[in-house]
Length: 297
Image 1 (tube, rainbow, N blue to C red):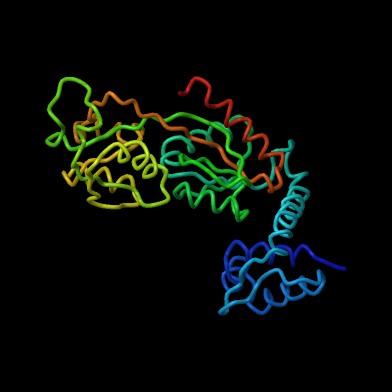
Image 2 (image 1 turned 180 degrees about the vertical axis):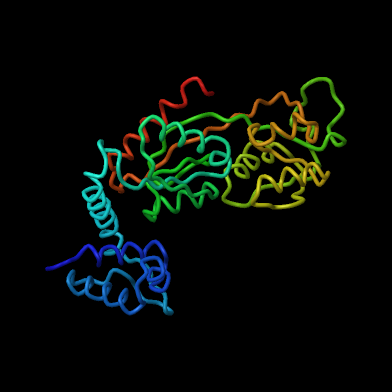
């Protein structure tokens, strides 16, 4: 048996990109070269790694068994290549995924502080909703992620990271008239501007607010927090967002926070795939991320 790193790299790229064409573009190879590398890998192993259906490649059970091992070998080979490029172990590419809220308001500062403290400059950051971040972790496209939604897949290790205050906001002209905090039922019959399915912010609204209302209407569904804020400012409905996301608009009077008796706090989490190889820089960053939160809540 003579399996090569090139064959494994092609295999992992196909699983991540979803097709031979996309993998070829990512690797700067021809489609025929990628097809030949995959065919030779399957010949060497004596098993097909993908099921072929309607011109699509679907990772099968044998492929799922190979993926974590292939990913680890490639990560370790990269670590060997970079071992002597620096003076410490924090070399190698670190791929970080994040929900939009964390990615916009916390992750840049965290990464900046990590770089300053370690001198490590090789990382990539991908922003999406919590569901997509988890999917990318399971597909070995990320090393770790920061999310705000709950996770059910047992392959993902979830570690509490920071807490986040959620608030109901509206245009000042639409704010309920009250000098005292309101019960949630004061929001009955309101129209809401919400994030898309898969978003942790939308999940929070559905479980913590909508579940306590008998009647509510979705006015708009948007995948941008900025678009939601602007829609609410325009009077198109109420919304529930992280206080971090609305502070500026509240401070300059474009938005008002609806005072509620119900304190709304959610958990941010650091999450990673337990089947994926944990490089020295992964361990260093994970430890730094947890210590970084001290005094920042």
